[in-house]
Length: 227
Image 1 (cartoon, helix red, strand yellow):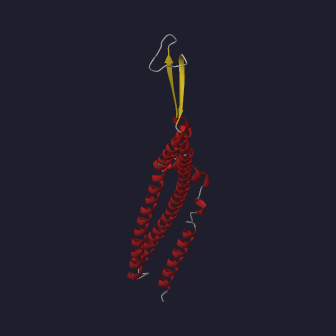
Image 2 (tube, helix red, strand yellow):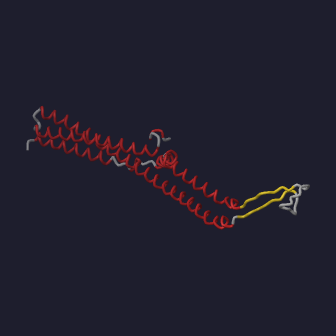
């Protein structure tokens, strides 16, 4: 193999080594900001409409339960009768004169109340449990979307570095080809690599914006507005 072609291959190997170094620097683990993640979770719990819907269900169940607790008095009926001191009612004579209070108690209603109260209490507790379960699910989903967004950013950095490396290689090989120091096949292969890396970069950009959109859907606001 001619010396010039050997040097060309060595140059390509050096570029590949540089790409590997870049790849080692694209891990998103170091990008995780846990205090910021907690802010994202708090923002989602505050703004996401489903959270408000779950809270309304809890409030409604609580109102029904409280109403059942105080419904004991529904079975008690009070009324009064007024008999003037000077009047005489021969058809319905009365012993007492003046105001008379009449109390009546619905026994069936009285015995049914404990069951109704227990039922409404269980419905209220179930609504609270469902709300708590959803909060845990929402928190996990925010974490997944946040990590996916960081991973997409790391992938985008990797692809951007690969494009830079490919562009540098194309420039060097073009210069070498013009000087007759490399073959057209090697130069053309590097051009193909550059086109492929650009396509991968576009896909990484799409993945990054998609991940950001998914996260912002839960937040209810722009990611940049979370302070």
